[in-house]
Length: 439
Image (cartoon, rainbow, N blue to C red; front, side, top):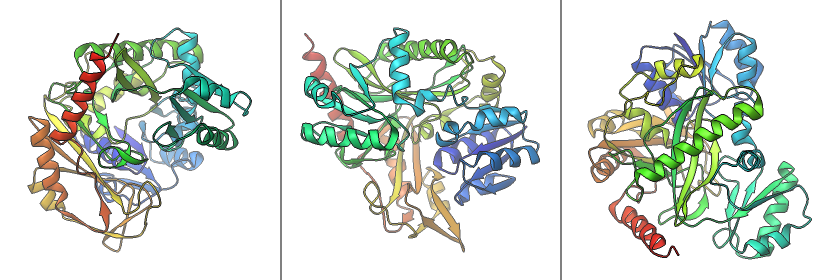
């Protein structure tokens, strides 16, 4: 099987590493020069992932049998639709179905129309009329850019937005940029990620993970694309039980069914739900139409069955809920990012990566948005590389991750508190307190 991966980040490096274990013949289309992806690929086309005609022509010229779309931006451009016209099937939804991620208002409206649980109180604004009044009515609120914003388009009252004037100003900026803004109630609780494969009728879940969006330790600072994540050996999370997992899967199945009706075509690809556990049960924060980054690195390295067979089942409509065997191990992933990431990244800095040292520490290395030039690994404005530890417990996995990080040198930054005992205990205490406060 000739497989094309579209995208040049750590998510794509992780997916390609899993496909390589299954013996796939790998090709890559990416804009940056990711050394990990380049080594695993038979051939690379250095092109913007959103230059759909060039990517499709490359796929056609190489006789590609399957394409796996990593990031969300090409999905918004309709890359799956165009590949299909060339006779190439994709693991990724069509442009219409990808609105699950590319349009915040579409997803809120979908849940509302089909009476799917988990929606917050919300309103979509395409002009400032009534904006201030609705924000004041909510009290605690969240403002979401309607379109794609690389994980940085969400701002919360009391954290990023201090006053109603702040909220109105940011909402107006979103309207000017994307044509619309979603304003919704702010949930209090612990967030978690559920990544499911979907063939249009059936979904297959994977272990839960928890991402850390804020740039600095203690969950402070600006939102980012994600600084790191962890998962537990029981495939749940320390503050979550089986019921919360089952509820999230049930919501995702309902969304799968609703999309098929709404778009008049099956959703085929990854359906990744960002949920939050509150005192009143779980609620939906958002859906994404591809694997999570970094949470994919907590899941695919644990996969004991063939990812290629899973992807084929997605395309052929033969997915089963129980497909996919995952090792009962815990994982901790931490990103190495350029200095200033989250505010103003310093690009072009050299990073010294001792790959053999990382391997000897028992950790995994996934290159992200870097460029290899002249034998050096250089930063861009986005995340640089991820280190993953895998073990029987979160604590031991976190130690392996930190041992691996010691072999990365440069003017870079890491959130070291991800996956630590103290950080996880604080989450458990907060969740317990919320449940005690339930009326």
